[in-house]
Amino acid sequence: MNRGRTIFSQVMDYLPYKTFASCVKRYDGERYVKRFSCMDQFLCMAFAQLTYRESLRDIECCLRAHQRKLYHMGIGSKVSRSTLADANERRDWRIWADLAQALIGEARDLYAQDGFGVELDQTAYAFDSTTIDLCLSLFPWATFRKTKAAVKAHTLLDLRGEIPCWVYVTPASVHDVNALDLLVIEPGSLYIMDRAYLDFTRLFAMNRQGGFFITRTKSNTRYRRLYSNPVDKSGGLRCDQTVVLTIFYAKKAYPDKLRLVKFVDPETGKHLAFLTNHFGLPAQTVADLYRLRWRVELFFKWIKQHLRLKVFFGTSENAVRTQIWIVISVYVLVAILRKRLRLDGLSLYTILQILSVSLFEKKPILQALMPPDYTYLDRGIGKQLELFTY
Image (cartoon, rainbow, N blue to C red; front, top):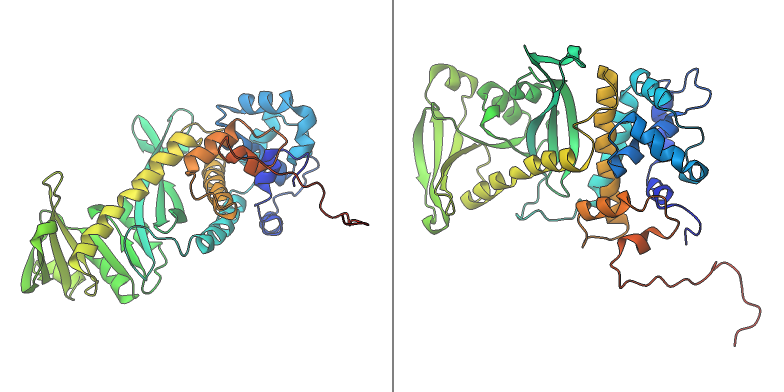
């Protein structure tokens, strides 16, 4: 089983090569390319993510130190930092965006039956954004403030498996709520957002498209109660009401009824008020679902800490977008590997840490990822028939 193959090449076996070739062809990624292919570029960048490399020079030094093993890793040409920098700057970032979307589709199918802490038949998403700080002198195209540059990654996270199923990169000056205009609403799905997305015009558009939302109210939100439903206050609930907005412009933007659920966190004593257009969920479920919104924050924290999303290997806009999409591709690829190998007992963090120190080793990947007391039973080639059976 995988005899003589590096662990890195075994990880890359989960890459959809036909889809990858289609993405490259779609955007002429290898036009006028003679040596350093798009696959070589992706493998070098994926290696940098899995091993937490610091710079292009760092990538070059590490890969050249194992020059004889590069062929077995799938890298077919000599690695040079200038060549890799040119590829990141010139090759269309949409190649990697389309590749990430293909991996996301596969990962969502694998995690479709997983639970996420709340019994819910419909798909639930957490929607938020994260700001990625940049140096203004190196990234002048990403001006955010007078002395600061940054980009913002708007992300829709599927709570089943915590897979980022939609990502859109904008300048950091773009307000979070504007991303709702770009979001394709799935009828029947539930979108959980914080109060930065409390825009009644956009929320009403989501409601008309058949989507459900849960968000927090602001202190200046004014409404009139129509009637109340009984609640069990022992778990922190305070009220479950059907309301309508009373301020002229807010009522004009959202003329339908809304549901207001008030909740007091038993641990912190913090008072929270949620607005939703879903009237079929229990009030406690509404509060529990909003608590799960924090998972998108944890996702941002995870990829920034364990993948290279704070230090970029290029300064152009194309290079930054390329690296962001390759980060997402590597994250989803590790999630696919975890599910395919049935490693539900291992976290993505544990898998990534093991891979980071064992990519050049030549042994079965399961043997590297399983606990120390795991023994791999080598049964030989397994295809040779036996002439005599004793």
